[in-house]
Amino acid sequence: MTTPEDGGPFVVIVNGETKQVDTGTTVADLVAEVAGSPDARGVAAALNGSVVPRARWSVVQLGEDDRIEVLTAVQGG
Amino acid sequence: MTQIAVQADIEPLLIAGRAFGSRLIMGTGGAPSLEILEQALIASGTELTTVAMRRVDPAARGSVLDLLRDLGIAVLPNTAGCRTAGEALLTARLAREALDTDWVKLEVIGDERTLLPDPVELLAAAELLVADGFVVLPYTNDDPIVARRLEQAGCAAVMPLGSPIGSGLGIRNPHNIRLIVQDAGVPVVLDAGIGTASDAALAMELGCDAVLLASAVTRAADPAAMAGAMRHAVLAGRLAHGAGRIPIRTRAEASSPVTGLLQQ
Image (cartoon, rainbow over all chains, first blue to last red; front, top):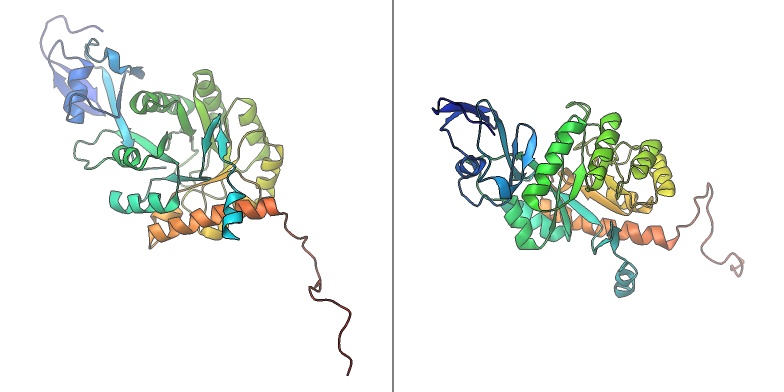
């Protein structure tokens, strides 16, 4: 993953909403914030249409205009 | 008598080598609360229950996953709401990552108005998911040819609809369901359209291996009572299917001796 070269905050799309994040923000940081807990049990994340395995959440850094989806199971179907 | 009847159905439902004591698969959509859903799931006796995948809602309280875990019910993620094979594949992969299961109820709908499956996207999705190692249980139209193609694609079961999702119209084409059952080499699960207990019993009498339903229970006035009714209906239909029903006749067939009648 690339991060903006100027090192400043940049914009990503999280679950369809724009969000400003700092350089170095990882998928793990974002999931913890969205899910409200760092372990985020029963949650999965996709970056630009591809699943990011849980084991890689803490090493994958976000880049400008990345689209992140954070999903979990709900009643339905 | 009851003991004998129950013992006659100890043969478990087998899907992809996994055995289930109950032939009723439950959905979770439409329940007014997690508490009511819990009562209904217990009353249903189900061992396998489907859940949808959606964006995390930080305001959501309670978790259907915790409920299923506490009840010891296996979770079957679905791809409800997906319109293309690509969406279904990503949703299934996220579910596999989130829920640690490679089972998926594959649902690819054609439009919001009918919620009917899109057979072209469905078959494409099934092929992608099977190739990716999933145990695929596709929700499909009551079309025997599509069902056959899904089985040939490697699906672990086929799940034809009785009628549109949530309609409660029951089984609109029993003949097609019977054709699917006769042809299938994998379990057939009647999925969608069930309105009341007799619909579930009919599905089993037609030879289906299991029934999947949600709205008929979760939107009933008394979900737990209807769940109990469905549990018994599935068992009754299964037993009736195996018991060999009498032929249908156009005229009466006396059940009392026709000789030895008094003469006056």
